[in-house]
Image 1: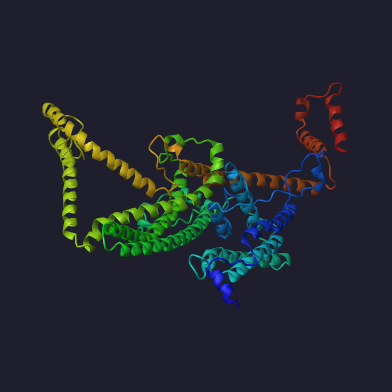
Image 2: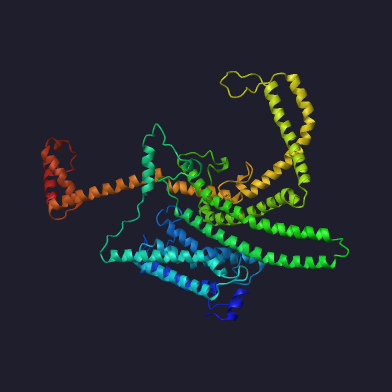
Length: 621
């Protein structure tokens, strides 16, 4: 049991446990590098180098260990996703720029953050390497041991310091339970791998085949393309029509699953961190309000500044309430973006598979291959950063909208100014209605008096052909000066709508917020397009199926050729050379067709009989 002093230190946020998680991250590189070396030693290289290189002493050992195929992996998708989720706390640690391993100048902070990213990647490399390794028995033991170490250290940290300074009791548990749950899942996954590989090793179960070149869902997609379309489509439900329709012939790659899982956990941690900051600011504001109250009490005799102070207190109180209330809608908006991005990925990649590029800006129809390759490495990290910043910006925007709503509708009613509020609201609504009505009236007048009648009753609109030209020119002349004034409001509304939509859609990396012609300035959208093209070129089911047919046909021809030669060698007895076999077949042909002997070109100095005798002599060799 913890002492009373220890509990007090924990509640004050000054707990110093026996395990420093940042220090453990540094020391975890030692077992991580050991596991990488072991898996690298087991990994075989496909091509050996020249014998004059000293690496030939290693044979085919020490191949490159691949943690995850970021392009075409569809197996173990959720295992890789949970492994990404286990890194959430360290990703947020890097996002907050809390990594300060070295004291360097301000201009070199980028290199420190790069070093921090590499260190976190090396620390969590064994999770992915053990999941993707072909040596299941060894990798399951190493992965289980490494996951158990992280799990035990995290549990020890939570037991020693469960409380915190901002949320009070169990603050550390609130921050670490997602990573702890991911580690527990990885423990179960590696244990399942160990049991299955052990059964294979003991001969109790057949070993699973190699990873197929053509996935099942890709083959089903091609088969569906080759079928005739049904005359009557199946009726879809409301959920399939309005929200999402599951496609059995499509699977998201492991990269998208891992990015989504990590984004969810990082968003949760970001919201909790934001709430901790809010608690700290709220406490400071409470202290400030208490000082204001004491000041109001002392200045109660004069009362000159009391209205201003009361308005400041009201502003602080309303801001705190609005900020708390808008946490839920901002969170739901950002979560909906994550699901919508997955739906857009499937929609866009299917359009590229069908050869449709019209949904992309013209400048992105032929992207740079190098930029597309880099986009694969950028997308996942940028997507998480966009989601986190997008949540914060959306939260601020919704809070501002909440403040406007409170000061325009709610507070006037509380302060018994409802009639004045309704009067001002009515005047404003009437003004906007008149402006919009005049704009609609211009369109109606133009359609009624200045356009020629329809050429056919079936036409939906009138043709763009003018009539009553004199009246039309007078109409334009007198409305010219009014439209100048109207344009001022239209310009401000354009700016306001652009700001609102831009901030509201900042987390949507699948669409650009730039104007047409300036899409390349949106680096996030460029990364999205590059990632789509890489997946399109490397996972297109039609292309993969075509390559699968070529490879299967080539292997079948090699097998048939090997079987034919094997049968021929078995019937002939001892092994003979290919040249003797060819001459023997030639001799059989000439014996069965003597007329061909005279048609053949003989060697110089030999007649036809001598040439035939020579064939008989050579064939006996």
